[in-house]
Image (cartoon, rainbow, N blue to C red; front, side, top):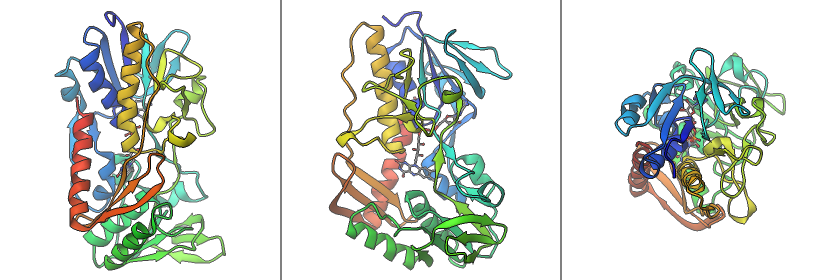
Length: 362
Ligand SMILES: Cc1cc2nc3c(=O)[nH]c(=O)nc-3n(C[C@H](O)[C@H](O)[C@H](O)COP(=O)(O)OP(=O)(O)OC[C@H]3O[C@@H](n4cnc5c(N)ncnc54)[C@H](O)[C@@H]3O)c2cc1C
């Protein structure tokens, strides 16, 4: 029985939309509302492409949702009144819920080191990416994780005359297999990206970045790609959260402090295979969003859901538009020896990104 129940999904990113899409199919008699501070769904996994001057698609959320009979509230949630089961806004009437799916995603952390907020750009959100202004001078991409690698490759390919420097304290893709790391390095170098793997950045200045050894690396623009954090709403509203402010959940993605709240995507702590927490990724946001919806509906029908079962399969990194890396994974996210590279990998990665947007859109 889901009739008359008010289910509110907070956040219309990959996790929130996957939840809403699922609810539209399984809880047809419930009142489903999705809330987002943005009017459009933007493919976040393509923001490095936008930073490199490419146009990326955006879909009108109201149109997407209302054709599935899901109400859309375009507003920024400021607090949860968990005792009254209401979402509060600054300029909108409060929204009552019986079940809440919390999927507010993640944002850049401007406090990672001094100077990030004042002097660095980010690609964490569409608003951050639109602010990026590149001149002819060198660009320092800080962080040799997947976002930094994808951005450096995209900039190198789109602007062959622009000096791009990828700075990290480890080798790019250090967590991947030796073959994957070698391919990333080879491709970045082919695209003209200079790599420094001994560079622990301790400050961003107007002229570049300062390293732990005291030296200054000059850059006309710095893009900070490391250190994401989550919105403070859950912590501020008294939900049980971890040190980063992510909602603590049980094996069914239910908040450990508030059983009427489920959490999914980047904003949730979710136990994964081998006892490791799921990493922040579109690849985890989609299945956790979908699962949270299923678990909530099962309970409304009086059925105890089975715990989430998740296993990793592959991690995909784009390396410009003509190359990519597919790293096959063990269930617990550790790398297998097998990788796929080159144009075929680029084609598969493009298909996965399109598929992810399709899976999210109701
Ligand atoms: C450049 C880049 C490339 C990436 N590439 C990959 C990749 O190749 N593969 C991969 O698996 N992952 C990738 N990721 C990570 C992936 O994008 C995220 O893990 C994923 O978007 C998380 O989904 P989510 O639904 O949890 O959150 P989000 O997609 O961040 O959505 C959260 C939503 O909540 C809304 N919101 C936030 N606060 C409020 C509020 N107070 N009130 C109302 N609405 C609010 C936001 O507007 C947003 O729409 C990449 C990330 C970046 C930045």
